Image (cartoon, helix red, strand yellow):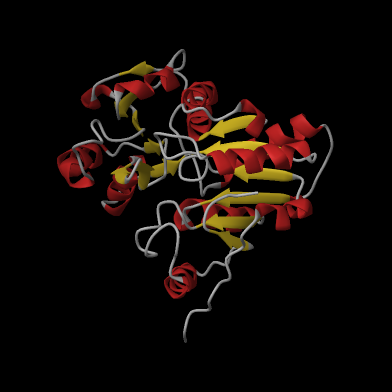
Length: 288
């Protein structure tokens, strides 16, 4: 059967009035790791000005306040969002549940703030579990460089907490590997993995709790819209959680869709059909 074709919605304003809360992906929708997307920031500002609540929901393996500092440096205006919930926040809560245990960290030094005040870091041979926040050097390495480490982790039968379930993410015009690629390699080898971020439920529960506190009143899942650019994390996560998703084609899938400005709709339909998922709406990029 031929995959269905999907119309492209030109303006967020056409669907925004149907929702009270937006859970918006960050990297690929609001910025590309180098610069903020002005149209997306303006769209979120307008949604908030109309009475909506925006919680940025990101698989960044850092506490939310660290992500806020990064967004400030990228010139993402704070008026574009009410709060941030990161997979780093969820990871910290998982680490807190393992109080007294030693962890082995897989990832760059910039992610070390996630562990402050929570756990003792240890070498692999003395660790009780592992936390993967990314590659040690994502400018040079690929998951294939981690085969030996995966084997060593399996030998010790350690549980791995994946602090960023993304497999790849945009950095400017390039795609770089993330912790999810290492975690998937470990899971394929038979290792036990706990994924802290999207598309898994814990991060959505935490984001909705923040949204309820911000709004000061109840709302239902029907009032919530997720916005994201990844089928694997954003679209699947929204489906798992039972909320609508606005899918942005100009992010990590842009290359396979033929470009950011003119995505191939047949290919897009094939991708959705293969995943068994249907978004509420599709946009090239988030524009009010």
